[in-house]
Image 1: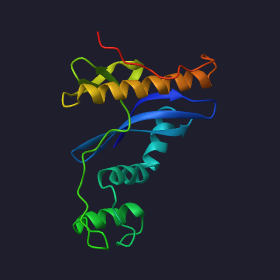
Image 2: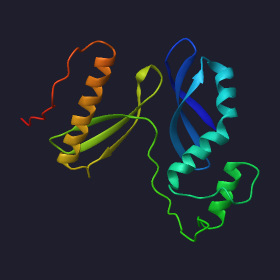
Image 3: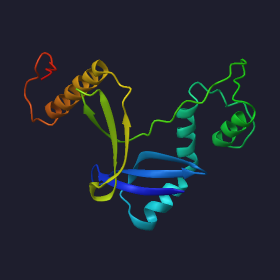
Image 4: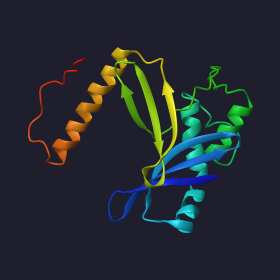
Length: 174
């Protein structure tokens, strides 16, 4: 079951839809570009993409899976057959399932505490879920902040908000 959570308009022909997919007992947050749709037409479009979305999620859960030679009419059926037969590639390598990282969230970082908090936002940007990871080191957090600052500056430059870029970004602890 796919439930749209939020929509961001890209241009007059395209939007990004953030949604939740419930597959049995598993819940995944995902996103994708769609034509400009809402209501039942959007739901019908997303439902029509269900197999493709499940395949993308399985690709994330089982990196390196070689399922194309297994039985099934579609790639999703072949992947499911591969899983049912022990997640073993044709060369004998067994692929282990890895934790799923949602395709979207907004990340808030507390550099001093070394804590990352992923916040999921829904309709009208209300907070719907959070996840806190206290296992991230301060140096990892600083590296993430530095890269995020560079990404923001690159975007600002592309949009014409910033004419020049600083040579480097320095993190200063207080």
